[in-house]
Amino acid sequence: MLSDRVSYFTESVIRETTRLANQFQALNLGQGMPDFDPHPDLKEAACKAIRDGYNQYAVTWGIASLRQAIAGKMRTFNKLEWCDADAHITVCCGATECMMATMLALINPGDEVIIFQPFYENYGPDALLTGAKRVFVTLRAPDWSFDRDELRKAFNSKTKAIIINTPNNPTGKVFNREELEFIAQLCQEHNAFALSDEIYEYIQYTDRPHISIASLPGMANRTVTISGLSKTFSVTGWRLGYCVAPPEITSGIRKAHDFLTVGAPHPLQVAGTAAIGFGEAYYAKLKSDYLHRRQIFLPYLQEAGFEFHAPDGAYYVMCDFSKMGWNNDVEFVRTMIEKVGVAGVPGSSFYEPKELGRTKVRFMFAKKDETLHKAGEKLVKLRQKMPAASK
Image (cartoon, rainbow, N blue to C red):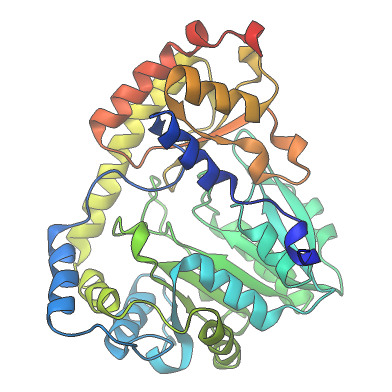
């Protein structure tokens, strides 16, 4: 009955984990949504936009004021001095749609797409929906570095694109300049595109500046930079993302976007314009607040017996539980939800083949202090409530 294209993948494991957490009233450290409100000025801006009548269709690829605000931010923060609101920017329904619209605009059946793994679970189905062949390159624990020879071998004449996510979900890896320069070199050698998901660009814990691969020499015309408001402004339910691409690619993205969703919510775009204007003090506090949350949560994981590398960015930590006596991530997470009252995401949902993640679990820490303390205290008691012998 169903088409072949949807038979190759399952529903989202992350969203399934949220349903299980709700069913068993577990603390949800699975799906990446905060349990705290966005800035009150942002909420008021959205309410005001509705009251002021911005309730009908907007320009398909985004209202002018939001695209202009994004262009200014891309020129200053991302160092894309050439970025133009009209020529380069498309506003979509979240970064997830941005990636799908980009792949529909660029990828033909049979093209090869390189994906670093562990990967955000949408990338795999996105590639399959376009008919692409997926080529996986491993980010290696504990520091999630990649082998340059492995990456070089992944490129060939059929390579159309490579997906980069920095800061990375699920590992928290932040790609450094040398790594991005190496990737840029390979893209240019093989006439391939970089699809760079930078949705967590403001959430990182190193002293290094965020680097967009599109800012590197030779990459402006072969990169699509994807970001959005969801993570930076704690509005994951607003679904506001944007693509920044050269004009020819932008034209294709806008065509795909138009027939996928028509356009992003008009009043929320108006509010988004206000959000981008919050200024440097907002972003400094964002970084400080997430550093504080990381400092609260990671010691609990260590005490509970998980092995992990402290994330350099984003708000996730990928943990290994093999020394705790378990070897099945799905059973581990299900038992943890039911017996301990804490939800994570099974590591296998970030790998292909899935067996590579069978001893891993991803936790997120975009939560209130009290939520993190409560979850941490439960995890410390994990071995008492779900001993390895019960697996």
